[in-house]
Amino acid sequence: MNGAFNLYPLLNYIIWGDFGLLTMVPYFLLKILFPIITSFYLLQLFLLESNLLHLAARRLDGLFQKIGLSAGTFLPLLLGFGCVTVALGALQLHPNPRERRIAQILLCLFIPCSAQLVINTVLVFQTSRRYLVAYIILLCVIFLLGGFLLNKWLPGKPAKVRTGKNAKSQRTYRSPTAPRGLSFTVPRLLPLLTKALRSSSGFLLEMAFPFAIGNILVSILSYVGFIDRLCLWTAPVFCQFLKLPADAAAIFVLSIIKKDLGASSLLALFAKGTFTQAQSFICVVMLTLFVPCLASMIVLLKHESKRISLAIWLFSVFLTLALGKLLSILLILP
Image (cartoon, rainbow, N blue to C red; front, side, top):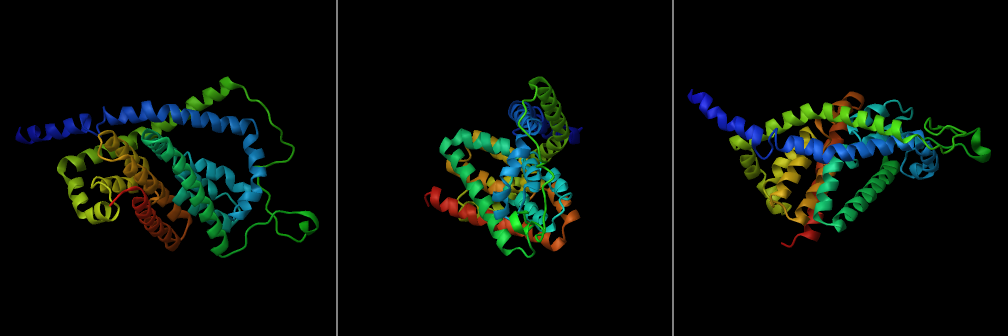
């Protein structure tokens, strides 16, 4: 009886607490994620079925060449905004190993998945529109700069586009996403909406269980005081070095397992007033660049060497801390 009595507060906290199954989980899945992810799928389907995506990929081939990629990587990169793990799997069909490696690194370091992107956008928009614009510009600059440096430093030769007199002598790669003879067509709205709702519903159903498990884990860790102890252990990094609240430690630990868990925790803490606007913006940027989630690392380890995978993981930690420190100097008064 005594054990059951002691267990009741924990169960109550798991269900009704700050990260509860009946508080945070339905709020996040239904009110925040569902409408935006449906809009994302609707836009993606429209771009695909109207042929705009294929036409854009062909037009962007020149820009992609500057960062060591071709139009064939456009769809996997776009897919990364839905799920980085799935995008990493789709990249394995790409025939050029060098482009595949560059795209893998860019996906793991600079592209947030749809769940994280939704939360980040909502959170940054709640702080200030200036921060939202700064967030978009910063990610674009880092993405392009990272691609340019990878193209310059990574060993191997990029695939070349056949042009003019050198067409026969050059090694060529033609993107399968940009077939000839395509033109813009207007798709029917109702089938698109039906497919988007079906896709978003399936996505939420797949996400509900791991998100609920993650929230149960967070609730237990919070209830037993582990998060508080973790905050104390990492206080020099987050409090003194980065000028962030101690609760930031738990956010980044959770994002190692699943990035949207860390982002949703940040959203909840911001709503409680734990983070200022500047601190929330810094955390959003850092979470975007932080290490790939567990599922993405599993896929990466499957298709890449352990040395490269570990290097990506460690570099993301270094880049996150370095950029976080720079932003804290610029935005937070000592």
